[in-house]
Amino acid sequence: MLRLELIDISKTYPAVKANDRVNLRVKPGEIHAVLGENGAGKSTMMKMIYGAVRPDEGEIRWNGQPVAVRNPQEARALGISMVFQHFSLFDTLTAAENVWLGLDKQHTLADITQRITAVSREYGLDVDPLRPVHTLSVGERQRVEIVRALMTKPKLLILDEPTSVLTPQAVQTLFLTLRQLALEGCSILYISHKLDEIRELCHHCTVLRGGRVTGEVDPRTETNAGLSRLMIGAEPPPLQHKPSQAGERVFAVNRLNLPKQDHFGMTLSDIAFEVRAGEILGIAGVSGNGQQELMAALSGEDTRAAPEAITLFGQPIGHHPPRRRREAGLHFVPEERLGRGAVPTLSLAANTLLTRTEAVGRSGWIATGQVSELARHLIQRFNVKAGGPGAAAKSLSGGNLQKFLVGREIDARPKLLIVSQPTWGVDVGAAALIRGELLKLRDAGCALLVVSEELDELFEICDRLVVIAQGRVSPSIPTAEATVEQIGIWMSGLWDGAAPAARTPEETSHA
Image 1 (cartoon, rainbow, N blue to C red):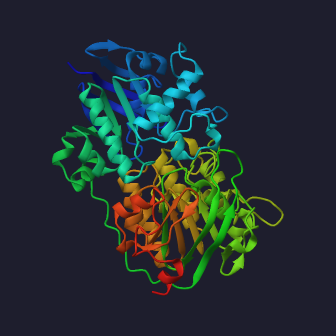
Image 2: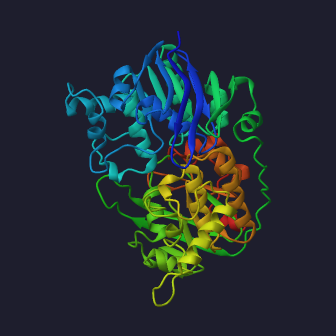
């Protein structure tokens, strides 16, 4: 008997047919991948299974019986739990209170707090149950969602990009957990753009393209290239990563010390690194180790740093707000797309004005035609699937909005570009486009600082790497000399004496 079966499921929105007669079959104890590019219909299909969206046509069967899952509460009663890519957490509540909201109220909040601690320890997911959600980074919020789902002891667990917050070692720990859950009879629907993960972990794979099922395969017998062809109709173009021709020092952080601003924040201690023209410096680390605080200090959101602790072309900018830094050539892409990178309800055209002010005259009047033309140019140049410049930011899939936001800053021709999580939740084709554009910018002489929890990404595009752990930054090491295992160890804060090949920024730049 099948645990879950979708029969000719369809869902249409005003501008798009998200799912077109989709069929899906999941067995008990099966780890089943759902693969597709951004906008292929994966999220809509998962939301229909979880009761967050009602299908227009078709039938859902649970353990062989037709069911109408009208809301997430009914889904949880059946034994279905889901971790969304875009989180469903209340910012003003603690992690424990958010988890408690979704569980049977026969348990007290104190019980839930203890269970969160136990479950997070068991599965290697660091979650502080007493910490307010608004103080958490994107990665830390994802951990809360995963722990909440695991605490329901589900019969079907839906996971959307679950490993982006973990070290390579912790990914393997999670895989052991998922395999154990599967052996106990739990079915797992696994959405990931990491093809290596799907091939290593999953028993079966259903591929979506344009809202339709285009194939079903055993991923263990497929290559990454074969899965890419099924997903996007072609292999992504190989990246042209030429040796770096690092030039003058563009950006330097020297002895940056910032006390945490609240009880749950991270203190930055003696941060030091530099970035030169024509190179990409990558910052690796597990979410919640100071990335959020560091990005606030570098972008100008937090101006508490000593002026000379952050310099751009030798000029101190530690006290400068974001606008003055942009005027000096520093552009920034935050990790949180909706709410920080873009205003959800505003059009793409209006969202260009957050960082691009070419169309704003000295008197304050906005040339709306020029704004729309800029948005249209970005949509075309970066292959953004959207309904045009007037489309609301929230109407785009995560990957398409990310292409637009990264493109907005690349197109500004920055002298220094800082990007946080450039391909978070982005499909293989969109990720290849974004990474290729970052390399083109580097080859044009721009200095780039890339913060990512995707080690494969950092190894693919960066010239040097540093690691941030517990608010401290490691020495830098040329990417060609680093290994995944070594960086994984450093991500635990164990770099002192652990890697004799590591060099200081000054040593590397003069090597």
